Amino acid sequence: MTDSQDNLPRELTEAEKQLLIAAGWLRSRYGLMAGMDAASKLGRENLEAFGRVWIGKYLVDWSDAYRSLVSDGYLAHHDGEFSLTTEGNAARKALEVDTPLWLYEYDNFFSDAEQSHAHALFCERVYGKNLCQHGLADVSQLDKLLEALRLTGGDSVLDIGCGNGRITEHLHDLTGASFTGVDISAEAIAQARARTAAKRGRLTFKVGNMNRLDFEPQTFDAVVAIDTLYYVDDPAETLRQLALVLKPTGHMGLFYTQWINDPADRAQLLPANTSLAVLLKKHHLQFTSIDLTEPEAEHWRKKLAVLEQLKPEFEREGNLGLYHYRHSEASRYANWDSRRRSRHLYHVHS
Ligand SMILES: C[S@@+](CC[C@H](N)C(=O)[O-])C[C@H]1O[C@@H](n2cnc3c(N)ncnc32)[C@H](O)[C@@H]1O
Image 1 (cartoon, rainbow, N blue to C red):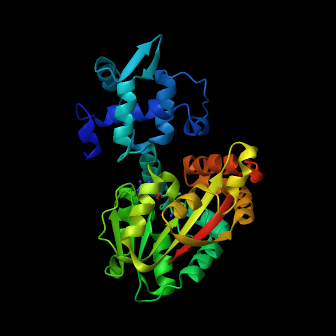
Image 2: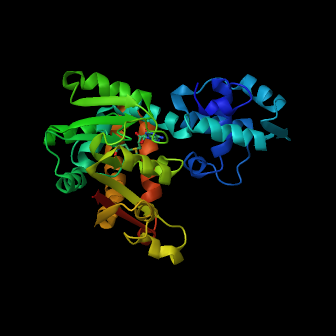
Image 3: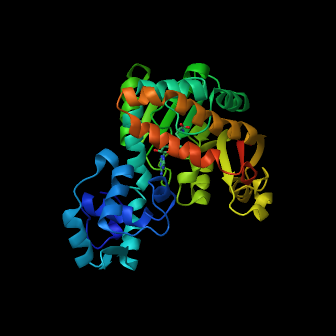
């Protein structure tokens, strides 16, 4: 399928890919959100329950994959439990450069959310407008982004991790700037293209990978990343590539939440010390920041309350899966100690 799979001894089937990915992530926060924990066994039952939650409508039959992955040495099997071998883990990492677990997650999300009236109401009430948002930036945060970037009709902007492009289109409508939106989710990009066909030329959408951007140097007047930099394999490399595609007078607007596990690391929450700030300094990129930590705490509380109000709507339209998906994320972060995170909009400028 892709460059990264060229490193594998043989091409994997879709079932094998899904099973390797599930085995790799079952004991992680994704497993927790699917009702499992660090002690959960990697037996068929748990693996398939994990697959039903995270691979969702793209799940295929894994029956043959268990056998072939064990016989080719990617999985070991003892007492009804599977484990990834060193080769299996290397294969999973290689294939996840182009097919990460969250590709399935986002394909499922955009395909369900775009059809859902309950989800549209959820976005209107939480974010102030339905732009099929998945991140944390509501319209007031988008206004702050636009105040910082001061875009005009002559500007050309790259939006990385643009989802189904509703936010991109909103930013275009408000400024007249032309935008290129890139996202790894083919489902999201198909929706964006279909919806904005009449604005082609001013709005361009491409399936692409932030791990490997393929634009000419100095193409854009601005780059925006709205809650997307958490997904890159090598953030330093992605930032280097973003700086390259920016014109010398260009700007970036980057929304970024920093989480810490250990309260002793709280200095890392300061705007100049977050992982992103450290990388910006490493690349000699100058920036200012706007603190959005309080609005984030409020955002998660609001998400939970609005979801609970709208649960009957989700249920009526047969979309409880989408409700649970958004609810498990919201309850996880609403309950996160707010002294262990900070959120900033970084405005990078020359
Ligand atoms: C948290 S969502 C944010 C979407 C949108 N910007 C918003 O604020 O609602 C993260 C987005 O990044 C995309 N994404 C994740 N990994 C990616 C990658 N390696 N390359 C391009 N897009 C990616 C996902 O498909 C998803 O649309």
